[in-house]
Length: 208
Image (tube, one colour):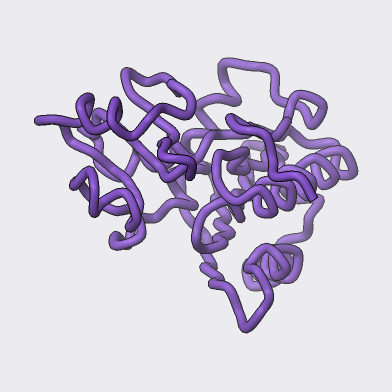
């Protein structure tokens, strides 16, 4: 929380994409960041709580020092979406702090300032599409391919083969910092308590 003129501590984390990351900011200054990949048969979200504790400890901070929690709400891995939104909601409720959700599409659009389209694999010959600063939903790949002509595109390794553009998986973009700063901006303009934080399932989770 912001007290006595101190800068607010923002804790940002994401388990929706191909790697898990946890980033800590004081105001707009990055204090620390950790990236975790899948390990053996464990999906990276299994390490979320321990990584949050590690980043806080390394900066001599306690959970109670956090004033804003920022998390990716999807689209992405259904397991990852559930993990980070649940942790964000529980922490924000227990700590009585604010929580903001940001879509993975909006986060990835921040990799390059002049990006006009973000497209992520949605399976079933579709892509999750973000353009004109809006989430367009799960769109057929043929339509996405037409929309992407002569426009700057951020995508993933799988769709890069079909659509071209830049794969976020091949960049070293500071996604945790991008998420945190988007959340800080959103927190100024909207209600942001744990009750309003919900997963973004553009397509229904798989059954079973």
